Amino acid sequence: MNDLYSIGEMVIDFIPGSEDASYIRKAGGAPANVAIAAAKNGLSASMCCKVGEDNFGHFLMDTLAKYNVEAVCKELSKDAVTTMAFVTLYANGERVFTFARKPGADMLLSESDVKESDIKNSVIIHAGSCSLSAQPEKDATVKAMKLGHENNKLVSFDVNYRNIMWNDDVNACVDAIKSVLKYVDLLKLSGEEIDMMGGENNLPNLMKEFNISVIVETLGSNGAKAFFKDGNVSVKGRKVPAVDATGCGDAFWGAFLSKLRLEGVEKISDISEKILEAAMNYGNISGCICVQSKGAIESIPTRKQIEEYIRKNNIEF
Image (cartoon, rainbow, N blue to C red; front, side, top):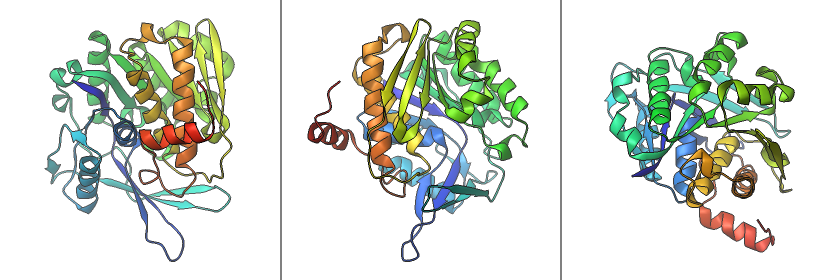
């Protein structure tokens, strides 16, 4: 039994360090980073992926193996090219992304790569919206979410809009997201993405229309907020010396899902506000620790590090 089954597009990010430092690599795309973050926080995780037979593809597979994330579709395809992105991180926290290839266009992940047995042998199914931007990844992602929903799994979905993946068409992205929300139990949004989905005042309507149980707004080191059908929970961020770093939201979500699982949550009906608030604290602390350094995978803390941070700061749940 796997705790987490993650599926989505592959992006390799390079974060330039100081002039004297080598590039810090992030093995790519939110689904991969969430799987790795969850694995570092005590869960068994698998990643459904197919990557190119190139240096970047080998790096991704090596990174997944390093953190004990099972690569379900681990063959390196000669027909695929692993997408890469260059990320320039400035001292003021500003990030500039430059994609060498259009993400999601050539990963060749197909419906046949998603096995029902893998879904049935997992507790949480996680996917990201960027993988809905191109065929055949869209079909594979929809299949995984649909199977998860039909098998009463906890389906987690991360809204992540990158204009290059949608040809600057926000409406196309929103339409694609809405087409799969009927399978979603737990929805992750950032502030900008909430605006894209109609604003905070529209969240109750989304929950009612698509029967979503919980929407979590991640705010990085500032905190997080969860929207229930019958009330909201807010968790303030921990003040830490931090810079913005790509991947910190993934670190938050991986730790967040880990806490839910470690608390014994297997169905959305098992999530109480108390458990969710504890999970949000746990995940938010993870995100804060992550952004203390210019990195993503390298700076995602382990469960032990988070617990030590909690102990030293006398944080109570």
